Length: 322
Ligand code: ATP
Image (cartoon, rainbow, N blue to C red; front, side, top):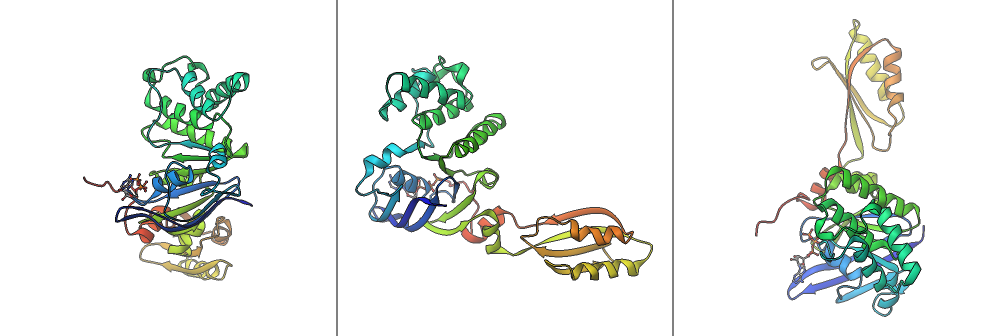
């Protein structure tokens, strides 16, 4: 896959504070790239630089082959920004808001009209075109905020916490819209404080902390930073105790199984399997075939939250007390 964004040794200072500190990463064309980090990690600053809203001190950024230092104008035309703060006019209707933003990108006349209608329908506000922003619920405003960022058909869409404060239904709608945008060929950079959301939607995730890249990869690649196996616990019983021990031994010899132990005290077989084994049927089959009764199965795997804590030493949702 070709890269659409390349960030090399990016640095941004605010006085003595280094908000972005030698950050390097790339975003591949057509992917949903998750951007995770605790408060103050430098996410918004980085996104503002990519979208030409903020300048930077050192480093090199190229977007679709254009150098941000020299071709900011060309880059601006390729990008759609959905900002963290809802940036809409209360007195304007949904239609007028989208129209205003799309016209900033040079859309006019019938093309503009169609683009506005499309964007509103896309976010599920087709029937609310004439409603003023001030009369809309929080979730509707969030969706309108997205429509304003995508109406001009950008190749790269940057979303900074697009689901803050929305209910489950609007969240689901937004998540599905993002997937559709990707299917239509856009690349999406997605920031959220809500870890399950990023886990669910992103193809690859970058974890940043204190302005630096801590890790980048698919969810599984990130989990492998912390551990490379997960444990399956089976609650088992049989009239023949030796059958349980023998089964545990059989499981231990299966490919991808690290260790398999039967504990009489807990009535449990614990099997450690490689993290990349997603189908556990081969582990269950020998047990079931030997007539052993299985009354419970649990799998314990490290999750992204655990990985995040291990890599950054702090929780994602940690509130900063001012
Ligand atoms: P959050 O998740 O809380 O939005 P973030 O990861 O987006 O955090 P940034 O907003 O990029 O982090 O901030 C990075 C650091 O730069 C923080 O310490 C912040 O206080 C500081 N900072 C951001 N904008 C400015 C500014 N305009 N002037 C001075 N310092 C700033």
